[in-house]
Length: 376
Ligand SMILES: Nc1nc2c(ncn2[C@@H]2O[C@H](COP(=O)(O)OP(=O)(O)OP(=O)(O)O)[C@@H](O)[C@H]2O)c(=O)[nH]1
Ligand SMILES: [Mg+2]
Ligand SMILES: [Zn+2]
Ligand SMILES: [Zn+2]
Image (cartoon, rainbow, N blue to C red; front, side, top):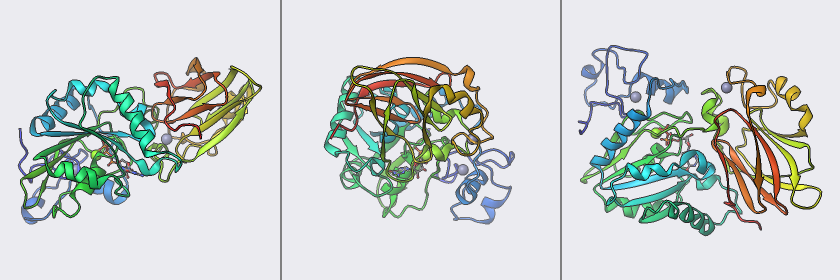
């Protein structure tokens, strides 16, 4: 199925409709006819772009997502698979390979490279990504680190995209697919632009962007919300707290057994035991919007109860299971490895391995992994 230009909202990809004002795609009756030739976006896109008001998408099932992805890939001859370097666990699901035809060339994009700490070496990060992809057995054409914000990596990416007729940009929500399309469009003369926002689920349908004067199309797509992503359990007003707006810094903490690090009131990490020595050294990598606090583990229930405004996120409006009902697991983290929490960030163990108790909302995913940013 192809979309004729003008049938769908170029902001979110939903077909225009004139009957349900509270739903995406709404344009008041007659508006399109009275403003021919104008680039109109639907009411919910307008409110999001101009007032930051977000309408969380309803009844969006995995089934629907797969359908839309299939549609985009059926129109494409190149796939850009995009992950968020700040949240690999929350933006990557290897099963995506099952959706992409085996013969379709794939470029793997590690986006938001501008947000990595300055000490991160691009070569090492690329090798790390290559190692992760290799385990899945899928051949890819290239790995490129990009920043849709600063333009890093786009010279290389643009050459590849220019050689392809139709390029689908796919990946989890909030990885920066629409931002990437924006940057690829710059200078192509196209005025149709997908809306970008910090809320997951901004793009709702396939948005074809025609490169003016050329027979080329970019296909922006909605993102899958990967299961178990911590940030998705909190309200849409908290969404921006989980998205860094400047390079993250690694914060170093030393913990003795029984001491804890609180990530807002959304995750708690307690040192149970070290492999050696008296203290464990933890480097924490988390978005600046998440306040980190060190305390004695016994104090956690009391702190969480009164976290209120100072230990954010969450905000007061968020409704999530209370602390007593969280998941509690003991995790062995070897020296030099990361413990990554999907949708939040990661800690890296230096000097000695340790056993940590991790407390999180039920269902939140985490894993230990080789350190993304090597010890220096
Ligand atoms: N610093 C930085 N921020 C980025 C980059 N790319 C995207 N963002 C931000 O990440 C958030 C999500 O960007 P979008 O382009 O809307 O992401 P998307 O993948 O299209 O998201 P959905 O449409 O919801 O699936 C926005 O706040 C962007 O400003 C980048 O390279 N660097
Ligand atoms: Mg988008
Ligand atoms: Zn729209
Ligand atoms: Zn909230």
